[in-house]
Length: 337
Image 1: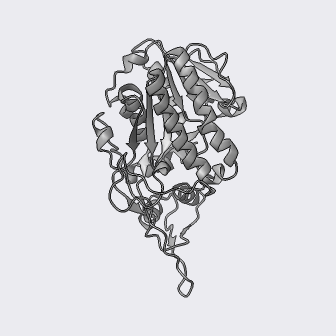
Image 2: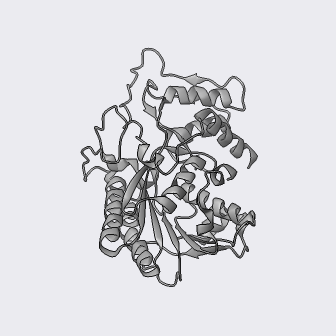
């Protein structure tokens, strides 16, 4: 939290304001809730009213038990796909209500598409009525396939099959972005878009289904890490506190109707990640197990690469937490809870 605060944004712009965060109990949104609560605890400015919106009161209370009863924490139970009535005045909105893991959005493709289209329409209408500034948490999946090996800039797009099972997420994010840009042009609603790459850190769901969560779950359970392929596929892993600082930079400084890449500008292979977590594992002697000889080793398809972060660099942001530091912090968090 202190590292995010040290990025020296104009935090006074949040003083005495109401911030609505949809999907508040989700991994990325929850970190924003934690930051605003930490900011209030510093006592250096008038408190931010944190309106944490989710569909399940029990889940909100379970994720934020330490904030229960605080005057600055307002849990709101509502489906973002329903009209946003009774919310009251808000000054900033972060729309993060959507599954992000393939394991979850493939299970509920209709709900995923609705949250990113109908849900986005609803929060945009609220922002228009309230005069609020809105940040939409999008995804690098909007870039489609075949981006090549060079860093992906905000103007680089490849083909995307709208009938693919994953399109509920990627096409939903594309439409959500289009709506943000349309409301900015037609109604003057100040909107920012964060296109997010692979993000990890304290609080990530260990059953998330993505490779970094699987590996963390393995070492916490005292298991060796078993690879299903050659491990040569690569990913850019961004620490959640760095990503949160980027979201706040776009929310406060971003050009309206514009998108900004948020992620690491370098990659590591899946094998390198497995070896790193084996070294960090609390159980000495944790091994990385490759497929046995004689068994066909599947060569993984290369990932879509890493982002070009030059554009968000103009907002004085870059990811600074190395995977060695970030994953050590992540393991320390789970060992302490």
